[in-house]
Image (cartoon, rainbow, N blue to C red; front, side, top):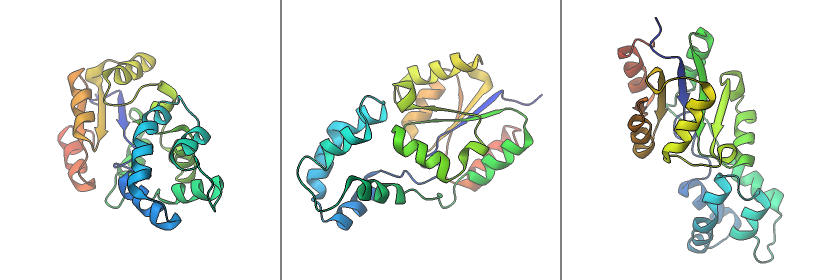
Length: 203
């Protein structure tokens, strides 16, 4: 019998780059000649609400960038944000594709992401061909590592925690999943994940 009914992947840091982490924001401020410290201060006040789906992209951009006139448009800025998303070097897309093709369990995502960037990333990198569902903070109204998001995902799926495997690059998210009974793996690279999955008899 296959050891899990469900395998849940994080996206940023496991399949793709984080997309809008501090490194990507630093690249954007250089491109648009903004003050990094000021942008980070505004971002810190707004990004959790944006990732929980409580505010829109326009509201986020108003709070972080367009609280004063700028010589560039919202569309230009958002396009530059999206351009920061790339396939993660040494990431797990190949492993995800193999597991999805085997069709031996349910494969999905459990990730923190704002609606607009999440939809861009799922579409632009064709992740929906591998993922049957995505439990994303912007739709769930909760962010990892809040244990409620894991419990809600299990409740929607109707699967027990011990039959669910969760893969994430952040220790706090892995620990939160393990604390409610999931099997959780911290992602550090494709080779290490491959070995971990072999040990669990997933591969």
